Image (cartoon, rainbow, N blue to C red):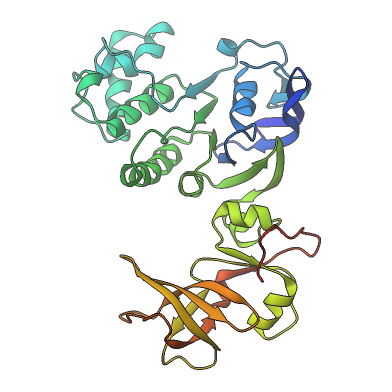
Length: 338
């Protein structure tokens, strides 16, 4: 394991921002720390970078304690939301800045810059100035500049949050591919679930300064640790054991429903009777609110091509692959149905 955090805490006077965090990032992997604003994730990233002193705990790289090692000697690169490019330098000079400081020859720097610009999809942009670039292009330049420093670890502080939603989604997928091709070890912090799942292969969910769940991204999504984690990850609703038993037709604990967990239609069979409360067409599916006896109102998706009408009787079927049974020790959140 390359990066290891053991019992890491960071406090500001009486306020504990990071509370006894244990984490690791293996060589060549990307770990995303996902959490809401104020959970301590950016403070954690700054502590790894050496920008915040630890109140307790240990941060190590390949077993070597980094306590007291200044930021510029850790061999890490930090990429911020806005990229922070030098606006008076060309793209090529921005990307090659760190290598020039390291004493590389002009020919070597130019060759490496050309390779990195091709890697991030900006071949031919070497002589452009940052002010002529779009937001997404600036972020690609910032990524290339970070990779040019040949960091042992790349630290990403919500790198895509300043971009619009459509561009953010496209660039997230590209970023994952770029990091994989470069074999880069990276630690990402973000509040955006889609960004975390698109870029990282491992995920740590952070809440109130603590890591509440950590694992492979697919495992965390399929098996949330508790109701609050499920809702934050993007599950639509958490049902109490009583409500889940009614919906599934068998004894059950708490169940988290994904937005696609309930399929509604007028001609479905082998489901529960319900009544349409509201219907909203979207580009991918019709979105409904349906009322079920003993369960109240729940979200559902409509069968393809069907336009539902409020008050219309329907049948609701459960997609078993789109639910998660929560651990029996998980606390019920406020507002659990019914």
